[in-house]
Amino acid sequence: MKIVVCTSHVPDSATKVNIGGDGKTIDKAGVNFIISPYDEFAIEESLRFKEKNGGEVVAVSLGGDPHKETLRKTLAMGADKAVLLKDESSQDSFSVARAIADYVKEVSPDIVFFGKQSIDTDNAAVGSMVAEMLGIPSVSVVVKLEMQSGKVIAEREIEGGHEKVEARLPCVITAQKGLNEPRYPSLKGIMGAKNKPIEERAPAARSPKVQLLGMRKPLPKNPGKIVGTDVSAVPQLVKLLHEEAKVI
Amino acid sequence: MKILVFAEQRDHKLKKTAYEVVQAARTVADQLKGEVVALVIGDAVQSFAGELGAFGAKRVLTVEDPRLLQYSTTAYAKIVADIALKENASAVFLSATAMGKDCAPRIAVRLDAGLASDCTSLKVEGEEIIATRPVYAGKALTDVKVVSSVKVFSLRPNVFTAGTGNDSAASVEEANVQLSEEDFGCRVVEVAQSKGRLDVAEADIIVTGGRGLKAPENFNIIEELAGVLGGAVGASRAVVDAGWRPHDEQVGQTGKTVSPSLYIAIAVSGAIQHLAGMSSSKYIVAINKDKDAPIFQVADYGIVGDAFEIVPALTSEVKKLLGK
Ligand SMILES: Cc1cc2nc3c(=O)[nH]c(=O)nc-3n(C[C@H](O)[C@H](O)[C@H](O)COP(=O)(O)OP(=O)(O)OC[C@H]3O[C@@H](n4cnc5c(N)ncnc54)[C@H](O)[C@@H]3O)c2cc1C
Ligand SMILES: Nc1ncnc2c1ncn2[C@@H]1O[C@H](COP(=O)(O)O)[C@@H](O)[C@H]1O
Image (cartoon, each protein chain N blue to C red):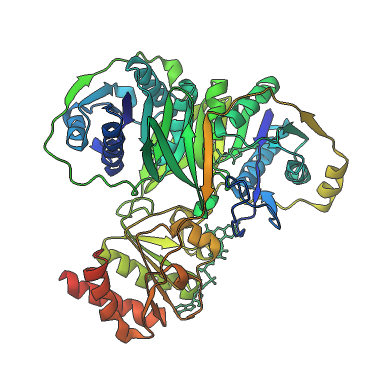
């Protein structure tokens, strides 16, 4: 089995976002970067797939040198190989997907794992775009995955329930929380990862199809009203919700 | 210019978000002197597809095939893209629902189009559509312009309002797309709908409980309040991680992003990751015994106090109001 897992490198979810001087990106000063949380489920699932079916796991990330940190962690968790698609320009999801698809085509994997969305841009697009570029099926927001005679059966979350999807291999899976419990890298894994090389590739030039015009903070909310400090405030609260907010 | 709207249906009923997105397309098309064509896909959709006329679609196209009874990412993406090409549409609109988010990226690739996903507002400047989309879980907003010749926009559910529609009718035409077995590389084989449980992503009222409730059985007070309000139960990550509630109820950066009319947070501290998922709700109510809890900073109305006293009183007061 050839397995690919794609990971992005994003600001920690506790980051207080400030807009940078260019008015288009965030101020990175003091920001701690991590593997995008959903990508951890993708990594864990790729490792389980290998443990069950044999083969190798190739970790791929597109970005600048800081992404090596994420790749190093993926290696420490158990990936066999890591590739940095070196590209520091800010990119729309189409051009990120194009570079990943170009590389993945060479590997010709049986299955490719992504996170359901990257918690910086929140596009939820790259995985399914790569699948379409490769002309293979995809199942997104997956919480359960099994392989049966050359097919996968995946359960995905939808509004108010789940869909069970059958897909032919090779295919793309995008991982949702609940799919598994990501492992911590072992000490041996961490030591081993230090010596594994990270291959660098320069993706072909692409022009973005979505142009970022600007970034701003949402308008702050007006401070709310503390209606009271005990149960006697309840009738007043209900009255406000009914008459002022008109939501009940 | 022409906008093609992929209008979602499930179980032979149009989704509320289908009306929202047709209405949003109408508003944009009016400013660009454009046309709105809606597309409904399924096994048998002719009987209800025309309803979209009331929300601004002059023409509604249908694609029917028994194999389309259940959703198939690959087949649906092909149909939408093929029709967009045939119709010479310059933009495709759809909802950022579970289905829309799944197929929009594939549609964009097929049309060699840029995708602005999960947009929360659209405006027209000159001949251009400028979309606003939240990033960093809503901690910042971006304005983007799609620069490819065809453009794809997915719109966040519950943010664009559909209203009640007018009495305009649409012409309903059957469109033909050739589908082979190859096009069904993946297909839904089973749908398990949690019966009687409203999903936070679709609910107009959400009542969320946090770790301050102390034990899973104490969520009965949350369920009762949600019940009388006709809303959904939400959960903070702390209670999902503790196994008290299923993770599909989790609201926040690594849970669901919601924008209901009313969000009631009970015994939830309001950590930054939680606020990220719900701060765009229209009205927020917080009930917390700690007056300094960050949730009060985003709440429109708050009561500082013990949830175990306040929530049951709130439930019975709402019952009284609604005559239940
Ligand atoms: C990568 C990452 C992603 C995350 N994603 C999410 C996410 O998607 N969603 C999310 O919710 N969290 C998320 N978190 C977790 C988040 O940081 C908080 O830990 C979590 O939201 C806390 O949940 P809570 O408010 O229920 O619990 P607590 O923070 O423990 O708050 C409990 C609250 O209950 C109040 N309380 C106690 N007793 C009572 C009572 N009797 N009556 C009234 N009030 C009472 C307390 O005053 C307190 O404010 C994430 C964290 C990380 C690191
Ligand atoms: N720069 C990147 N390098 C590698 N993988 C990425 C990159 N950006 C996004 N991805 C993958 O695509 C998924 C969805 O990202 P997005 O479409 O940006 O929300 C992420 O969870 C990653 O698995």
